[in-house]
Structures are given as structure tokens and as C-alpha cells.
Amino acid sequence: MAYLADSHRPAVVIAASGMVSGGRVVNYLKRMLGDPRHCVLFTGYQGAGTPGRDIQRYGPRGGWVALDGERIDIRARVETVSGYSAHADARDLLNFVRRMRRPPRHIRLVHGERHAQQALRDSLLAWAAEAGHELEVTLGVDFQNP
Image 1 (cartoon, helix red, strand yellow):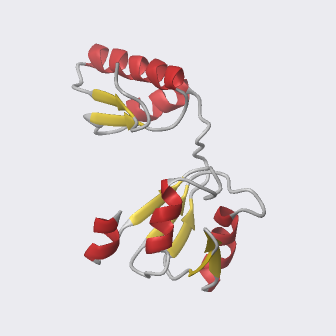
Image 2 (cartoon, one colour; image 1 turned 60 degrees about the vertical axis):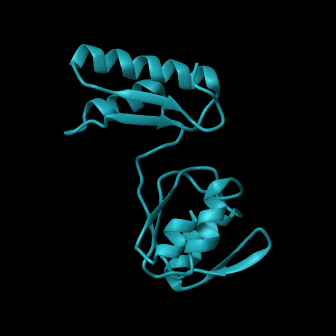
Image 3 (spheres, rainbow, N blue to C red; image 1 turned 90 degrees about the horizontal axis):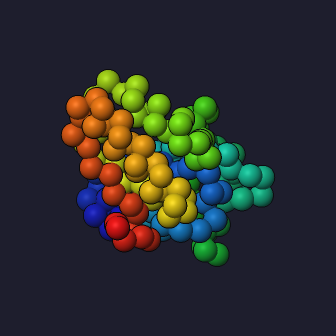
């Protein structure tokens, strides 16, 4: 995060559902919302009364948002993409990867419970083996790979 914020290079912060109420995305946004070179891309639902919804609502008008009790002016571009859900099921996520023109060689699963991550990893690896595609799937930082 420090590299992105300090490098002065444009970046896109992708914020899925979760309402920007905690976690790493809050730290990214605190450092990057004030810079017009950046873009915040929401891909999931942001509930009313949450920082995520406030960013969506007030960001395009040059407003501000409170994150961790700190007022952050919104100068970054704010966009929302409908149709993607952080709550997609494993089949939808697998189909998303299968339809890619150039599928990734590495996927890191960072959301969901361990058993759900493992099941999705197994499905992705089975697809890759069947398709003859080289793929590595690792679980997020909160879990160790078995």
C-alpha cells in the first residue's frame, strides 16, 4: 500500500461488498482517496449509511468521507460496476475464469471461509488440468496453504 500511495503512480482500488467499514481497503482508501490520479472501483453492494455508500454518493461531487474517525476529502475518481457480486457462488466464479480470453496463471483466494476457498481452489485446478492450462491457486494471507 505504501508503495502505491508514495510512488505517485495512478492506481485503481477495487472495493467489493463489505461497505468499506473495515479491513485493508480502509487503509488503501485513507491514503489514496485524496489523489485525483487514482480511481476507486466498487464492484459490490454498498449499504446505506456505510462509508462505501458515502464514497459512491459524495465522491463524484468532490465530497468527503469519514474513515476511522478521520475526514478524507474525495478527489479520486469513483466508479461503480454493476453485475459483479462478492457473493457469487463457486460455479459463477469458475465460469468467470473459464470465459477469460487469457486465463490467469495464478489466482489468490482471499475471501470466504477456509473450506469454501479450498473447494473453489479444487474446482479451479480441476478445470485447469482438463483444459491443459497451467494454474497455481493459493489461499489468502489469513490461511496457510495445506
